[in-house]
Image 1 (cartoon, rainbow over the protein chains, first blue to last red):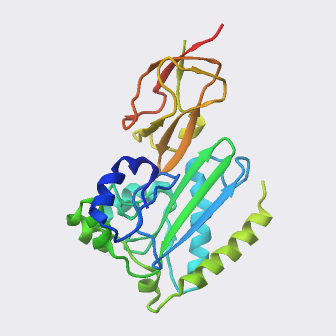
Image 2 (cartoon, chains in turn green, cyan):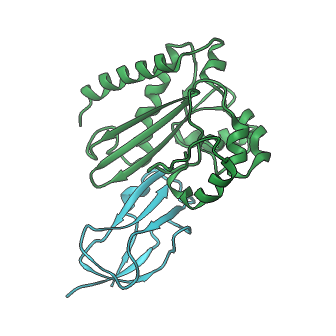
Image 3 (cartoon, chains in turn blue, red):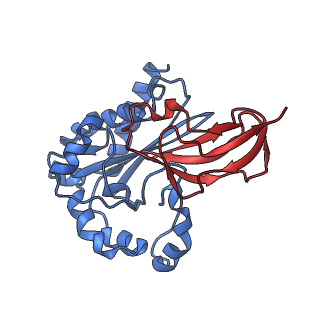
Amino acid sequence: MLGCSQRALRDDIERRLQGRAELTVRESGGGAVLTGPWLVSVSVVLPQEHSWVCNGLIDSYRHLGQLHVGALKEFGVAARALPPQELPRTHEASAVSTVNWACFGGLSPWELVNAEGRKLVGLAQRRCRTGVLLVAGTLVGPVDWALLCDAMGHRQHEPLLRHGTVSAQEMAGCPIEPERLAALLTQRLERELLTTRT
Amino acid sequence: MTGITLSPDAWKDIDPATEALLDKWLVAEGDTVRAGQTLANVVLVKANQDIVAPDDGRVEKILVPAGETFAQGKPIAVLKELT
């Protein structure tokens, strides 16, 4: 799945994929991501005046990031959402180089990382006059980074993405069923959004 | 003439060195547009958002082509208001 600004790459990627995966382009920004059973995605649409999204686009990521921190904690995953002021420091401290074309190749405000700064949850959004779409993706299990890098024409980046990311399963030290995480996130979203309408 | 910009609200809490990407133009130079009409999509900190026409008018000049980035406050196009 490509970010909206990557749509021009579509034909080249289709050619390299040779049918190994379906290719789609999402409405929100950010880089490419490989979806599958290893990724639990969340999409939330809110009115512009909702308290989660009415304080600017950076703050709009905060609530969804923190909700993920709480949900993952129940699975024994001790991740944290990165406040914007910590981003430069994290980049410097991390051994991970930024891979601009990949969602999980860089860090943005309120995305989730482990203690070493390896990325666990990516965030993006789409803002328009009728509302705000927030999206999140959690790496639950191992990802075929080689396939993604090959499709994007950047095979050399596979080690960077592998070392720069971490899955919930790896952090918990045991298997995590994507369906269980999805169910818990749904439950928490319902609870939060019903109590914070505006 | 009015310079069309991404609203200051959209740049709230964003590092001044950060630039937005002009993702897609939905109008062309010479097009007549209505106030509130979406003119372009831009991406800033992984957020895709619309830039809308502030008034009725004609798109006189596009200053930032699709695929290029722009800084806070920089006009991306010039709108000539209809009188």
